[in-house]
Image 1 (tube, helix red, strand yellow):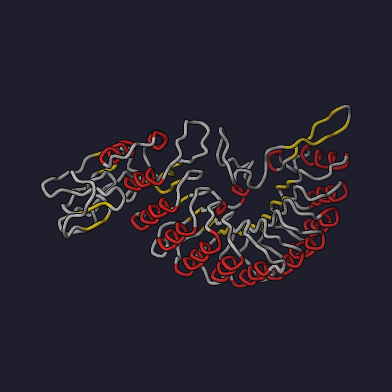
Image 2: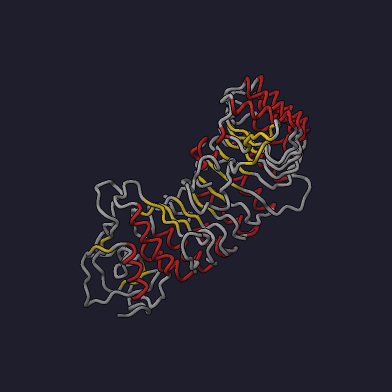
Length: 488
């Protein structure tokens, strides 16, 4: 058996000898492998090997079919396929991948809706050997023509630009993957180029998470070009990717005409200007875009001028449901514009203002809009905003007249006894559910105090808990409010 070297006249395509699928679409070749069951007929997690065509070579494992051999269809589990392809490619198996493949098979035997393979390198429940480029090449080998694996989570591993090349080939071959998480690997600009170009022709991937990969400004430009062509991707996370001013402006400019994207995360770009050009361009985009439902602009150095421009644009927007302005430089003057917006806006459901500096006056502006005018906002986060008792009590009073506002997060501000009593009353009276806020009242010597709860809009954005529900709605309230926020 030959593993390298392409025969004369041979072709390269999805593999027929290795267990992940068939060798292309040549004459006399099986049309494709019958893989698993995504239609609810109750079959176990297995795949059939298609008949191998001679002279074809796999893009991933480089196995070449011999003319004298014919391997007829046989059932193999994902785990067994992985072990076989590693053996035939003389590649050491990764025990972590093997274990997670076994666990995935045990968790969902009938495969009525497809499964997500979670091979996260920060898993603390089992021994982890982080996935390398070669490990991913073997994994892609068995998944490229797979029909029942619809999600792949490879966060916190050690994939580089070489791994990104395998991912790009995988996206070109696979036609069923909807979710790909490459968060916090070591993918750079070159890898970003390969993945972005692979998405030019991909028509199935709905959500891509590149969070924390240092693709830089140039890598961001490749994704901006992709957004001009791709019309199926609905969620894109480029947070913490070191995007620059040029790429950020390019992305929001093409988003003005993108009609597929529903959720966009552009957190923590690298900006050197104080002129807020990126916020101005983002505001222009929001005037024209009628599809975007979720926008994350955390750590954009946004100040009151930028908030004013953004609010002016949102008066004309009818699609945005979730606006994240956390970790900026917004003060009470900027929140005044948000308060005026909330008086007229009838679509915004989640507003995240965590880690700004709105103070009491800003909290009062919001409470007036919520008490008297707005009846659509469901969640408000004002954690760590230098708000004292006066502003916090005003927010609690607004919930007495506004029955729509159900989630409020206030930890990290200046609690006085009036604040503690006000929120304790809301919880005891049933107006505020204990799982819809991040404070818990308790009494000592006749005085009410507030303790912190691990609840919030997206507490599990960077990590997942070691036990319990990964998508716990108490810690990730945005999932309970907006379905589009899933995974993001």
